[in-house]
Length: 85
Image (cartoon, rainbow, N blue to C red; front, side, top):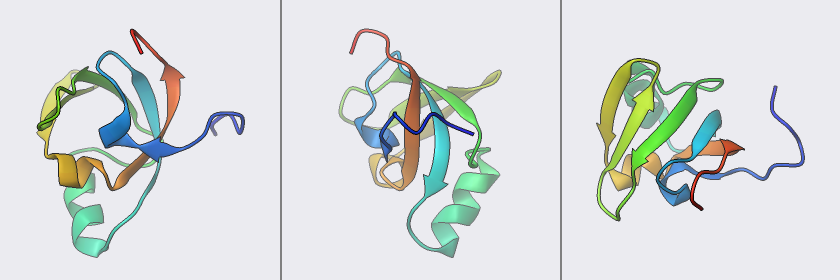
């Protein structure tokens, strides 16, 4: 599903411009349910449009989402492409 050579890290750490793939979720059922409602599920590809230290602005397909840093920290990703980082 994802290259094993790429480490997993929390979405909140990925820099602006990076393309990542969600590989897992940490946290409880409430967090997992909220993330699923937003379309942030394992296998989804996400582009970080802005990660300036506050909430993250993400692109998932044609959808733009604002996700708080606490929730973003529970999303585990691997890099597909690193832009500017």
